[in-house]
Image (tube, helix red, strand yellow):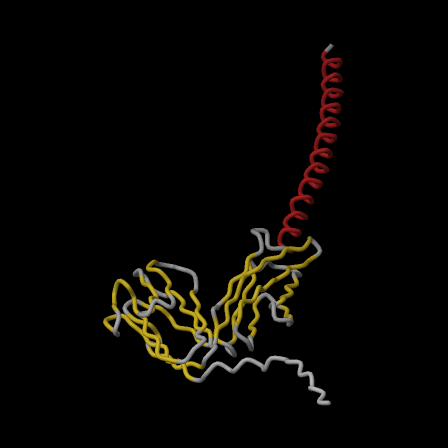
Length: 233
């Protein structure tokens, strides 16, 4: 009886060991499969920016001044970044510099490509003949001499609210903070004074600036007239 119980115990033990082996094998297989999948997913995520592609710019910029453009977040792995600068030229790399040779508004597109897929991001870059920084209590530069037809951009770089208000009312960026870059093209010669409506006033009082525009507007092309000669009898 004792042997039967012992034999039954041995059989139970062997059966338990067999079941334990099967369970361990299943656990190893399951662990191996589940371990491979997340690791593969992490690899795919690392190959592309997993937070969404974004792009930053150092603009606005003056004509002939290099603009710094950066795509991010930059992920580890084989990711290629291709740029379309909006002026017919292209570049590559996570961070690039590009120089525009004409004033205007340019839409820049960056495309990130890898085996995991493709993402795109865009940013507008403003380019002007001259850039004036609006800082607290001043404009930098305060006095500016330009040519007729030049474009000027005022960019906000202050903590307090400011405005760009022409004394003669010909242009205005209303009083505020963190307003978008404001631009104006001067189409005629003369002196144009402007001021901050909160910290300055007309006639160069307080926070004020002057744009001196030189030159003249080119005359329009002559009209095409059809002259019919008179036939004299």
